[in-house]
Image (cartoon, rainbow, N blue to C red):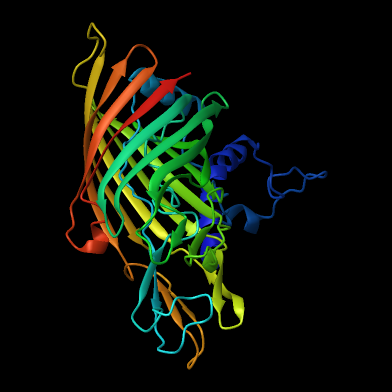
Amino acid sequence: MIRIFSISLIVISLLLLPASLSMAQEVPPQKSEVQQEPDDQVEPSPSDINKPRRQPVIRRVVRLGDRDEMLKRARELRLAGVKPMWGDFFGGLPINALVTSDTTPPPLWPDTALDGEIYKFAPGGGVSYRRIKLAEGNSALPTDRFIANYSYFNDVLDIGDVNRYTLGFERTFDDGMRSIEFRMPIASTLAADQVIGVPTQFDTQVGNLSLAYKAIIAIQGSTLTSAGLGISIPTAPDSRLLNEFGDELIRVDNQAVHLLPFISWIGTAGDRLTWQAFVQFDVDSNGNPLVIAGPTGPTPAGRLSDVTLLFADLGMSYRWLEDREGMIRTVTPFAEIHYSGTFEDIPSLEFGQPGDFQLNLAPQGVRYDVVNLTLGAHLQMGDNLFVRPGIVIPLREDDIDRQFDYEVGVQVSVLH
């Protein structure tokens, strides 16, 4: 909780800093007691005439960015047709429930639930759409737009192929200085309900709704800085491991609210080259309650918490072809490098007492550091329609750091 409070406090401070500095500049200087004229003029003594006087300290407040300058720069970037980043993030892997006891399994569990047996199931909120990366299909510049994204992940670790869809919109206010964004992911992936003794089940399900507040907070030279806070709301179904009769063996209630503080930058280098960068945290604020069928029936087993994630993203785009005739008016190639990593060791959870039925619920690995390369192009079709095909290539070879073989997809933005 201390980490959550600290990260949120930093973001709030960044959002409020320009306003507070502006207020500091607008307050007229007040005369100090030394400067105020007394009612009666007193002739100074000879000793006072020669005494050196202390000069008042003048503190100059430097603003991070003037509002007019920020508005001007934002308009310039919009006129230049700045495009969102593409992204790269999968979103989560299954959990393994490892039996660590050789005792007779509880009544609802199969007779094969003995030491070394592993059961795979989705964590609370499902896989591939439970963790949110705000840099995906996003820009540091607030923009009025509708969002429709599709990604195909080939051979995801311990799952197989996954299809993911995202629908949403972003709406600006305060003269385009701020925006609110909503996103709803949908995925054809590992089903929320898994049944022991049958092949792995897949299903198309709704994920966790996310909303994000973004504000331009500073300008320095040609670089515009934005910051904000996203929230992931638990709207996805609960996850369950069932026996062949439909009885619950494990249930993970999807209740975790994730806080997503971020800061982002956008700038230009010359007339055609644009760069963008994002830094974001993903913090599980409360975890997901866990219930396991033990020797005495369904038993609360604590909370299954997600590890804190750190995202760092950098992208470059080049305005190659412009003002073309025909269906495609502009072509802007882009290249991005993305890092997604655990900020701490991924927690596991032990269930049961020695001599009784025991389970170890653990992820695929203790930590991961994913580095991916994204390549593609922004295509403008008409005045308000932008289509961005892209491919993501993992750059690391370790299983936990290479969560899929490749990702291909297309992102669509319709300005409004």
